[in-house]
Length: 222
Ligand code: PMT
Image 1: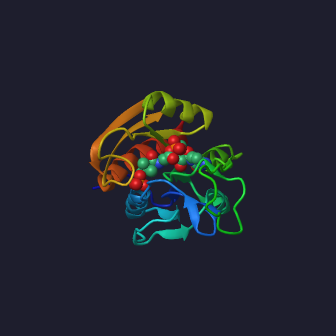
Image 2 (image 1 turned 90 degrees about the vertical axis):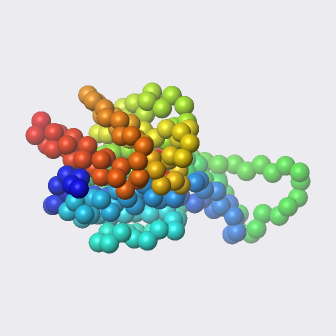
Image 3 (image 1 turned 45 degrees about the vertical axis):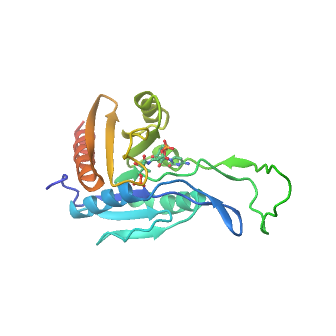
């Protein structure tokens, strides 16, 4: 199976969740397993790319030939992405980055006290947006995990974040998306779209790369 020719290309991929500390023993995170991002990393490496995978905490083995850098928080993910983005041709943001982090990480374990506990959160940097807004950005692919108005919200992200492609993930569909082996994507760009039907994430990664390769070549020659 060919997923396009990625030789001479460097692909930077974020995958998995981020983990935002609350105190020395607790954190908030989400259900991302990293499977989608790791599948894309593996398929891109097999298609000839140099692949740098910036990964949040996952249980997955590093795909052969892929350069993996482990991070924990959104801020670390941003720093690592920014350190490598200049050398990359294509950036694919598969990670489920926490939108907020605790405004203050408690030095000591937060003690059980009242019946209610209030914590304050501050917004995390938007890694995808920062990359896409660079003076000379790479070809940029975002994901949109939505549970309602999927296409509408995905198109907003495509425009607002100045992306080349957005891959919309309808997470209301049973057995697809977060932490499953199967997924489906509605891939959208400025003047077209393609629906990739439910399938194993490894096959889906290849189908997505085929679209990316197509749109990348189209942009180069236009
Ligand atoms: O890891 P799996 O279990 O295999 O699941 C795959 C997945 C469902 C996590 C994946 O397919 C997916 O949809 N990833 C994006 C999840 C998400 O957080 O989407 P979002 O709509 O919140 O973010 C939109 C885009 O901005 C994403 O490309 C995200 O990586 C990026 N982002 C978001 C927030 C932030 N602070 N920085 C970012 O870069």
